[in-house]
Image (cartoon, rainbow, N blue to C red; front, side, top):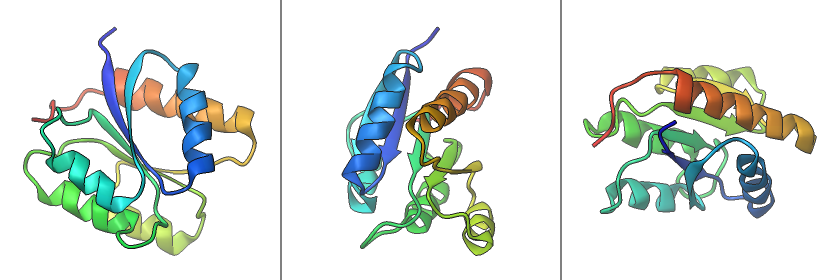
Length: 137
């Protein structure tokens, strides 16, 4: 199985730690962490290869998830990268806006670690392995 690059964008250190722990059990991936929208945009502009999947929090200070999503969808080089909103918000407005801005999927973060780990496994199994999309870059 080909090693996939996943960009995790979240400003909450606890949620980042939970996600990284969950990734340990979900396969061999290269996980890049961006703490907030600014770091996410810098990572997408940097010299490193682009990710195969972006897991994006919605509610972040300074540059929120929708602004990052707009930037991803607005660039030819990143437009086809699947972006899964991974957030605590279950508000209908947030879900509608995320899809309107081009989200590939919307997942509400489970509060229980076992459920969170299973959600991460499911997301990465589908978006990083089963789903086929044009490679970025």
